[in-house]
Image 1 (cartoon, rainbow, N blue to C red):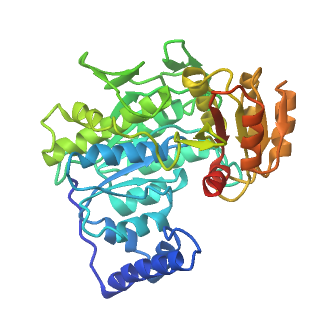
Image 2: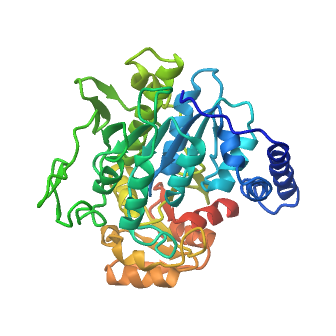
Length: 439
């Protein structure tokens, strides 16, 4: 565990912690929310240093990236829990900004470990305030363009923040960065860190990584997943582990099966990233023998079958409906891969898109999603931006219906699809949440 300097525990910190719990309880009692953010905001007003104080003395892992944060955070927390072991505190509701982190940590004062999902824009702040043992970097692509803006700007901010991490040796063990070597933007950012574990986790979306962040040249991607700049020496780094189909291949030739209850290749990649991060923490605490941490972590993940409702199946009008979340071009592309891998090609698909604060107001990303891949399926468009979605589907040549409301849209899909098939529901963030509430 990293050795941290203890911030002074003041009376203000104690009051702020009590405020977090009290405000969150009141929020839940009044039915104004789940009580995972508003209390944290109030606590930070009382004590701006509250996050650092609550993280002090804990083993901390941060997970960030454009896609897969929530799933990987859950998998990493499960990998660290073990059989009957202490459960790490985690912001498993997806409240991934400092207020959510404060609320989670304040709610579990005795937890010795914390696994925190972090919004991409807040990674630098979380590094400074929590002094993490591990940072997991999944991918970077366009998302919420009205808030996060250019991917390259975010990459440069990550690179600067990671350069300030604690190096190995000295008073503590330092911070390990577990980074996806298949994403050039992640590779550029992580290369500044003192200690990096590179993982070949795959990358289905390349459109935001064609320009070399080092020299401005062009990144060329090979069929084998390797990539390199056509002008300079910037290229995919050598990896400590590589996701190969259903297995994780370690650099020493060891092949470990990735057996999880979550579908799709991208979830096997998420599990691999979680396992490589967990290995450092499990071995540091003696829960796994040296060199056995990855196998121990992977062995604990088989029971995870859904994450915050994602990948779960519900029944509507006697028919199974699988709930899937996708919020940007990279995520939608990965979900289409999942449909090809595990879905019935005759299954009806309901697409639901909103444009609220949590989604991002700019929906121009719809034109970058390869909706053409849904050709030949029965497709229904719904959500607040169903008309925009309908226009995009029309230009993609995908026959579809436009229906107002997620439940009527599912009912329409059920009525128009073959008996015995599963209806696939794909929604972005708030559209997914709307359906879960309606169900």
